Figure 1 (cartoon, one colour):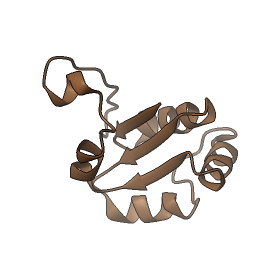
Figure 2 (figure 1 turned 90 degrees about the vertical axis):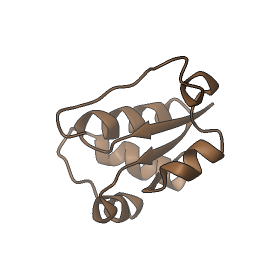
Figure 3 (figure 1 turned 60 degrees about the vertical axis):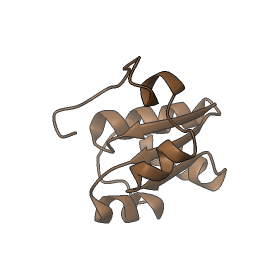
Figure 4 (figure 1 turned 30 degrees about the vertical axis):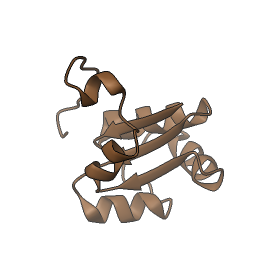
Length: 97
């Protein structure tokens, strides 16, 4: 399963890391290019127990990636068909996302 998580704050990042741990391929999108660069290198910007381990393992296994390019995520079908067509909305948003 491919998932696109929009937002790499507390809610989005934790969710993305957990989904990738389930074995799903996750692309996490955020508008903050510096945060995306840090996450892509495995640097954890928030403090959650063992989250750094999840990130490191799933980066190494290629199940999680980070990008600022929402258009690519849509073009590659990482968003569910219903969401792209505007028929269905599912998402988690934290206060900073």
